[in-house]
Every structure is written in C-alpha cells, then in structure tokens.
Length: 173
Image: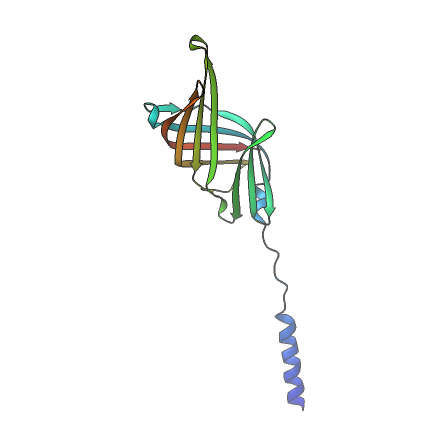
C-alpha cells in the first residue's frame, strides 16, 4: 500500500510540474504599426515609349495597421484617399510583403496643341521581405513583375508598351 501511495504522489507531482501555461505569442506586428511619411522613388523604363525613364520622387502619407496578431496592411494615401493597400505578415525575420498593384497617373495639358495628355502606368510589384526597422524607418525596393502604359489624348487610348524596373520605398515615422 505504501508503494502505491508513493507512486501516486510521484505521479501527482509530475503532473503538476509538467502543466506550465503556454507562453504568450510574440506580436512582431507591433514593431511596424504607426503613421509614416513615405518617399517613393521609381526607377522605371517605359519600353514602348523609346525607353523613357521615369524617376520622379513622390512624398505622401502612409499608415501601417495590424489586422491580426502578426498580419498588417500598409495604406498609401493620395491626399485623403487610399491610393494603394499592401498586405504583409511579420515574424522574427521581418515584414514579409505580398505582391501588390500600383497605378501611376499623370496628366498634362499641352497648350501649344490644345489637348490633354494622360499617361496611366499599371504595375504589379513584387513582394519582398523588409528587414527589421531601425530608428522607426522602414525601406524596401519592389521589382516590377508586370507593367504596362496607356496614353490618352483626344478621347483616344493608345497602348504605350511595357514597363520594367522597380520602385524604392522609404517610410519615416
């Protein structure tokens, strides 16, 4: 009987010591959440338009919000409206961005010929892994997977060919 009691006590002690609660999951997304000033620098070549290079820098607002423990959405704004949304997930290696679509729209009035010229560049940009941020800054470069250009003038739309290159992003808190 003593042996049975000692074995039962040993089993109870083992049961109590092996029932540690699971540790809280690490929420890596919290390191990225916030409002940023975004600088976008395209390095694009418009192949159908005699290889014209597009390098105009754009500065705008950007916000990263957490959608679940380690998933985020990056909202790029054009004034008060959302211009682009990028989905990502965070882990110990950094922020992993999915492929995303981006459209560049430029319009200019050509006074000497009295018409409006509009250029629309549609891009599918590649997802990348963004290393952990330093001093609140985040940066990455997304390559163009597929890109095309359309030109509109006099109510007509013309195919402007394809686009190659990348866009660099710098977010500062």
